[in-house]
Amino acid sequence: MRFAVFISGYGSNLQAIIDAVKQNQIKAELALVVSSKKEAYGLKRAEQAGIKTLFVDPVEFANRQSYDRQVLIHLKEEKIDFIVLAGYMRILTPFFVKKYPKRIINIHPSLLPSFRGVTAIKDALTYGVKITGATVHFVDEKMDHGPIILQESIKIALEDTKETLEQKIHKLEHRILPKSIELFVDGRLKVRGRKVEILEKPQKTSTHNVELAKDIG
Ligand code: GRF
Image (cartoon, rainbow, N blue to C red; front, side, top):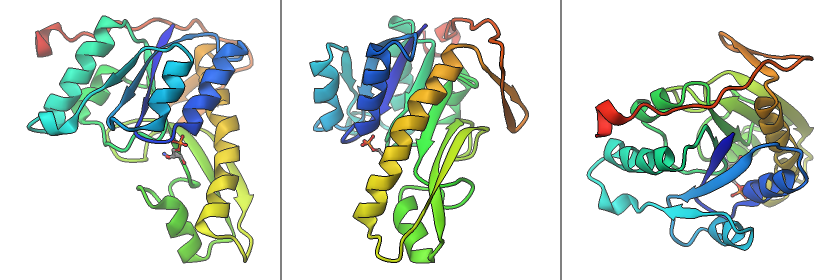
């Protein structure tokens, strides 16, 4: 299986994935890193690891769907079977999501369904919750919503700041995101409605042909 990681920034999760592929924890090829930001440090990480990169500039597209369409053309060319969103700061259009049903994985820095959106860590602190964490889930057409693969929690200390909490959450993320990808690649995830069963025995994992021809020519 070949996969792509989508980023927009620092790419510490991308690095954890690169390392897990190198160590053969994830038995799939990380074939492409896509960024929506030209200056994303994650692009450098990918280049250093010898992974093909792609920057698609949002300002060049009239709307989100035409942007996604362009990205999909590249994914088709690269024969990408599944996608991991690791700090990708754009919401995928339903058009895109339908092309990769239950084949897009996202990491979110809270215990969903609490604190959706881009300010999750700050929101958890401001709210005063005592426990937060990270969630890995399949992407569906609603934001931070699809079936949950793995979640892990941590306690928030009274003296935690956004920065210290972010560090703690990143530590969790760097463990549960590669683990989730490993389970997916090994055919150990079975989606039953909103629930994701983790199988003891793997089922056969299939490759994925994106059917784009009729939509994007
Ligand atoms: C992570 O906290 C992730 O949960 C969120 O964006 C952040 C990305 O961090 N979606 P990094 O770029 O992987 O360091």
